[in-house]
View 1 (tube, rainbow, N blue to C red):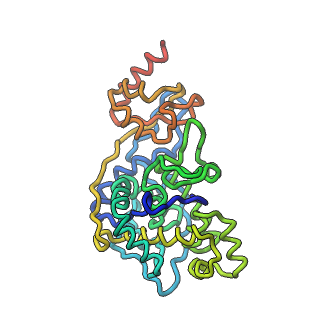
View 2: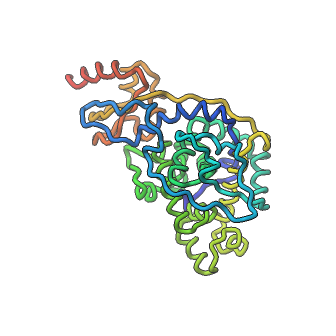
View 3: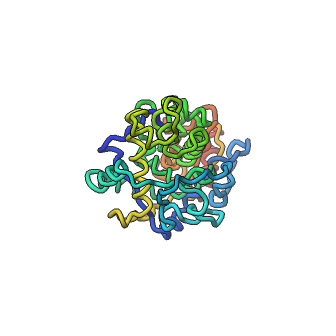
Length: 354
């Protein structure tokens, strides 16, 4: 979220572009496997979640009515952009919900930065985003949030799940209080801000609530960055809810005035990588996996040994775990790669007997 966005020029200032449609079609089925995180699990000591490839995102989040698009005279992103890939329902982002981005000098300034000094960081973040971006865009749209708002992740964390700054953490850099308010677990054992699906659902709900309050996506971004109170105060004082007008008057906090053009610049680049001088990244596959309820506080190193898997890969499948082990309360699901269930069950039975 971020009343504290840490987008300095070096770390986070270089991200976004358009993936080719074939890339999105290739990665989307793989990324859909992540969505099993939101369903309920049986009470058995180790029960499978469900087949990881048969759970569309749309069934896991509550759709909202798409908001109105931007003001007249502002050009929408091209339908042939990163955000126009088919959704699981066969629709296109461009026909459902879209943010419009003006030709503003502040946006152009950040585009030039991303193309210049920020190019290396931008490209690296773009490569990291490849497995997650399609599923995140799908979740955003399911909440009635423009898919382009995934640019927030590029700016906030460069798609580094362990990114943190002044109490904000995870892909969307949500503060602990905001994350918990949106239903995420954040404690010494688990930090669901690091989970690409759960954190996106939380951020999408938060962004949608901000839009409902301010009726403007730039203003929602400003509130996401600096908090609702300074933004609502500026609206009351000046009788305007137009971000560019309030920004020109200096009515909004300086960091919000810089943050919004930065995100919109990133989104514009993401809409057409080639035109802005960036190459689409290569697809990076994710595991097909299943999630189990395990009540014992197992260490991931122990589980990795049981199933003959590198512990680093098992950690990647369980990004919310902070201590490389399951919490003693059994409130977190253990994810195993497809095909590892039988090995785990045998070893786990022996473990329980000893």
